[in-house]
Image (cartoon, rainbow, N blue to C red; front, side, top):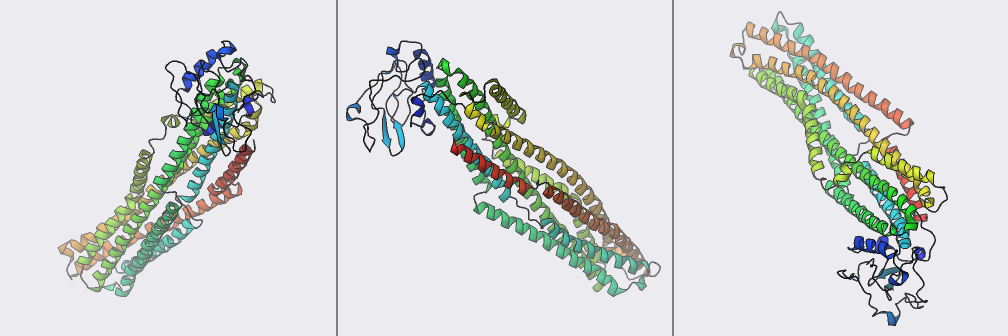
Length: 559
């Protein structure tokens, strides 16, 4: 922000940042520039940018109510041909042909509203540029603060969420492995004589994994419900997708409106040659403000789309887990019925369920990520009204504009009026840049880690699911083939051999599932402790940044 030389106009109570700007501001700015080069008698603006003394007339009587002088209420102001007189709720910047207006304001409490064709002196416009700069920064701080609260509230991940779900899945995998061990031992000792298979042990080999699958499906359904509850809480606090986009869109419009007013006032400021240095600083500072606006909008887009994708992926994954564990439990039950009812066709039905469960295990990681990606694209479509300029921005532009601003500050003395107030905000501008850069880099690291995790999960799913599918096929063959649905020795021997093979396939699948789940949780816990020690957990970073924004806000309000 820049501060103009001290003038009487600079101490005006009129806050142009809170008033609408006349639509013909650009014409007015051009006329004001030519007016400064004409004799003073043709303009109410002196060459040095100050409004001359008009003989002691005041805008207001010395009354407590602050009403205009009664004799000034009917004062008319001449306008250039073709110029439109401003409405009573607009600020008209005047033209070079205006006579000095009288009765141009009325005081309502502590707010001054201009009336008639009032001219704005360049020095006053320069002061209002500083005022608007502060208002823009406050709005951008509000936007960034909302972004952080949104990230904290939406797609919330509890401290023990991963360990809780892993605990139940370890029970599930462990019980499945137990069933495979029992079946391998029981059927293995009867390979040469199928009649030696112990019925009660084999029944246990089926109902133990069934119980484990029920536990796994229940855990997945529970996590799905917890996510749904957190989503409902976030929506009740105003962080639903529709409400969030509406909120950010409103803040964007507020910032854009203030930037437009600031740009228009800068054109008036530029009409005074003595304010050239101020215009130079204000122009570069304006670019920085626009860059910060764009980065704040893109930050929200990253948070919003990221939260939707996380929630979409997790919910899809939990639904797939419910489906695959449920079908596996049904398969175990039907395999149990095959033994209990002495009817091998149930083995074929069990094999169908095992095959379905295996295919779900194979493709659930892929389909969940495809769903999340599609949900993210759908969410992005709902944000298409965010300005294209913001989408085309990058950190290089903000860094370049900040570098230009720093060069201007170095060129001038730090305490020169042209850059004095900008120096106050220089550190905050750099803090914003540093925060955006760190957030973008962290997002890239998370994306890289997510790709690695996705690759590992897909590989694990294909391995375990492939073994489960093969087991299902081995159940289908003796179950649906009439040649093996007999009570002869050959049918019993072939059935026992095939189901012994399925038990063997279950051993590596169960061991791998347990070890992989444990590996994921241990690695995650190590990374979490490391991040917590460095103060880089998402929650820690958000809280620290909120405090930083509060400090910036207090500094701005104290200026």
